[in-house]
Image (cartoon, rainbow, N blue to C red; front, side, top):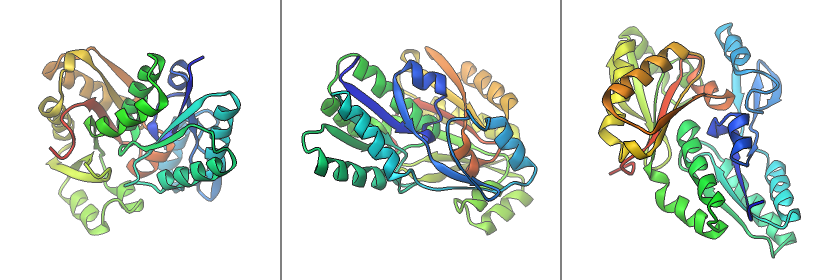
Length: 291
């Protein structure tokens, strides 16, 4: 057993198997699907395909921030096992969950002042957050202390790049990520947005291209332009419910860069609420965002 418990939230879009293998705890986000309150458990109770089928059928989904009680419970488990804790949250530019976790840490330290707990803003989401979480887990497994790994994350988090595309503006507009007028014009002109998580941890437009295939090509272009030392790293490609697009993207990436490997995963319920079934993301280590 290592000396530090690594905690994240389900916005990282790592599968339950990947979380278990890497000894990572994930705090679930609450969400509402057609008026029914649920807790995101990474596709265990309600599979991702069931969720996206519901969206395609017209269901509405909304998300909320993580519960402070769930954060406190995770800190308590780490403390009771005699270990430190490091929690990496979804970007504070996209959710108030980081602030919630910080407050929960303060409350816990008031009761347990000897606890060793760090809360770090990943300044990323989905596969980008997952990439950072997996590297943090690897460093902890290698013996790095909680304090040292928290400092490493803060110094290197902007190197984790995440680039998205979607086939429709519908869900971005619903979630307030894109103005309705922009979405309407984009749909009429067949514009496919290419977005990224910027240096402030917000979802921001990067490119606008016409046509589905051009959007996939644009993703591979961004990776080829920004990736560093590709032969040493594993790239993550996640999709919501568009496996054919993910397969095409992996081929395009393989034609442009030579990486150590690729992880194929899914965009989960929380991020999928805002991307819809056509969401596609690639995450890689590259030049710091904003540079």
